[in-house]
Every structure is written in structure tokens, then in C-alpha cells.
Length: 353
Image 1: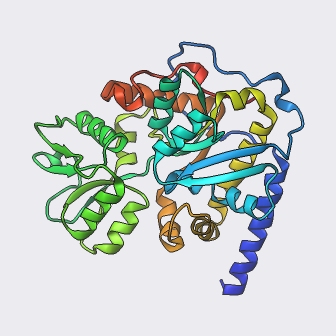
Image 2 (image 1 turned 135 degrees about the horizontal axis):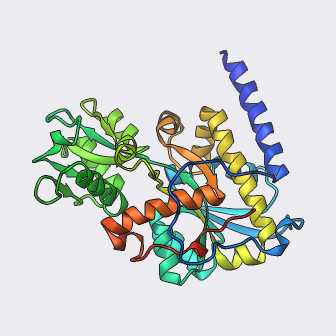
């Protein structure tokens, strides 16, 4: 396709995106998963859910940079160019703790966060946040420089594998245990490089031979060090041992108070966000450029290459609740502290009908 034709296609897709954003009338995407453990009645949409939304209402949205924010890029770009239905203010953060603090003090209304951070925040605040949708499935991969076999978990016996702290290390621990490896005895999971960016630097420089990395760090590391390659797709490994539950790593949450007071605007946001994710699937290159322009990730070329491996999604409603509750049950069994010490109740799930 010629450069001119690509530009025309990008323009058509952008116009289609803006039309979808203005429509505000979406449904959730289906996913099959196990039934959740119920403790309270699911959160119901307030009575004014079908009321006309207020386009002038300030809506403060925050997102973590990287994969968690990829699905937000088209909506952010539309808002910055006058094409969104609501009066949005967007902030991109590199540290999830800044986002959780903003949700607690009320300076953020909606945010894209890792799923473990969302559960921990719900527990910490006594239910001051609810989850709206899943936005990212599995993004973790085992990368190797080829100095040792790493094609299966059997190959990893006796090895040291580096992983970022918190969720990535807990997920990898679970996979090791399900494949017959006892962490600390059969395999060492080292979290010295607690942040993905720090571990990425160590892998890229050759200091580390085996590491668990998320996209787009995998793409960056492999580009920097030609000896590196993906040894295992950990989402595929998860599916082998947990067929009833998906690996879900990113979500969108809302302050419970905002959800109760502004149901019509919240429904409109979900419609616009779904359209934003759909536009990513339809135009990867165009979205990658918007990802760079909005500050979600620094390099469009890397984002474009990584997006097919990032499992960006939009899953809302009861399908979201089923998938996420199953994931939390597994994480609670592995490391209760990783999700705030308790499995969220059904009132954590904001299901807009």
C-alpha cells in the first residue's frame, strides 16, 4: 500500500473512531471463565443510568504508561482534538502509587491500573473504588540469551530467573508451582530488579540471562541485545494450567462515589473507551503514533511492534467479573498480600446494564 493510501486509511479510521465516540452506546465483549466467589450483591447501575449525560462535567482520567494505557490512546487523542463526548482531563503516570493516591483523594475519577493494584486499593479504602472493565490480558514473557535451555519449565530446574516484584513474580511463582518446581529449592525467582525498566536494562546489557518481562519491554530488550529471544509465552503457559480462568493484568477502575453520582457519564466513558480499543485493533500503526503523541509510550515504532503481543482488550459486565474473580482466587492462594490480603466482594464489580 502506498504512503498516500495509508494516510487516507488512517484518516478514515480516525473519523470512524470519532463517530463511535460520540455515539456512546456499546456492549461488553464476551469471555468464558469460571463463576466468581460471591460475598455481596453485585453493584447495580443507578436509576439514572440511561439519563442524558452532561458533556460539560469535568472527568479526570489517569492511566499508567505502557501497555496498561495503550487502549486509552485513541480516546486521549480524540479528547485533545475536540472529538470526545465528555470534558476529559487525562494524566499519564509512570508510578501506580501516584494513581492510587489520586483516586483516594478524589483528584482522579477513572484510572487504568494493574489488576492487583485495583484489588489492593479496594481493600485499603473499604470499597472506595470499583472495577469497570478489563483492558489487558497476559503480557508476560520469559526471555533468554540462549546460554541455557529455557523452552520448558523442566529446563528451568536449578536456574535463577529474574522477575519484577509484585504481580509478575507472583504469576511466575504460580506457574512454576503448577509445573512441579518449588521456588527457593528447584528454582530461584530473583526480584533484585524490582521495576520492569530496571530489569529490562539488566537484560539488555547482558547482566541477566533469564528474565520475566512484560511487553513492550520484551520488544525493547530484544532490539537492544540480538542474543535475546522469547523462550516462553507465559500467557500460553497460564492457559495450560488454568483453563477455567484467564490471565488478566490490566483494568479500568472508577471511584465508587463518582459511579453513583454520574452513571450516565460513566456509561458514556465506557462506550468511548470501547471504541478507543476497537480503533487500536483496526489501525495498529495509527494508534502507535497516538500512543507516542499522548505520552503513553515514548516510541511509536516500538509500540507498533509490541501491540500484537500485548493482548489489549475490552471486557466489561458479568464477563469481566467472572474472569477477574477467578484470577483473584488464584493470586490469593499464591500470595494474599498481592491483592490486598482479601478477595474483593461482588460490590467491587461495577456492572452497567
